[in-house]
Length: 203
Image 1 (cartoon, rainbow, N blue to C red):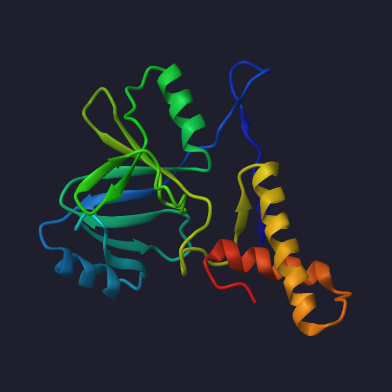
Image 2: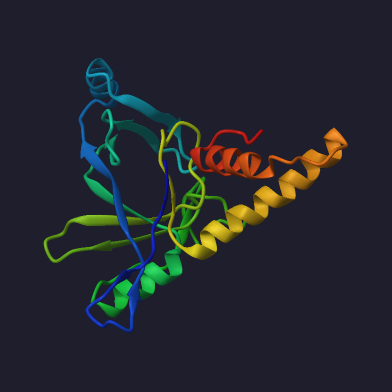
């Protein structure tokens, strides 16, 4: 299924608000490997188990059919996924949140500014609520392998247009390799875009 999400209307009908998706809740656990076995035994999909650049471990599961996931760590945290971290940060600040500067993870911890290579997941910011709960804002433009199943979603018309441009450029190369025009280019575009967003290598 391919879906298209527009920005939602705010209280002011002349303004549009950027979508912020609650996609990950971090569960505090004393023993990550023991917790990993528990959720594996439940049949939840293991999305990731790797060590980040700063040395911390990321273990993520998704319950069957769920649009949201959990991560296992020492302290609780909630992830807000956005397509434009600058716009999301500006909106939260306007509404009273004390949001950190944008940063990315380096081998020695936080490095100010987004990752210079601009990868998906490479720009972060944090804020806390009035009760001390911690939030992490994460910019996502393309998911890593295995993160989505059937749904392909676009946060704005610009994001969809960019996906179409990448598909068009890749299709040009495809036609050069085959040496003939592809009359079913629309099927090729659709397959390319869905594979790209699912984190699978486009054909």
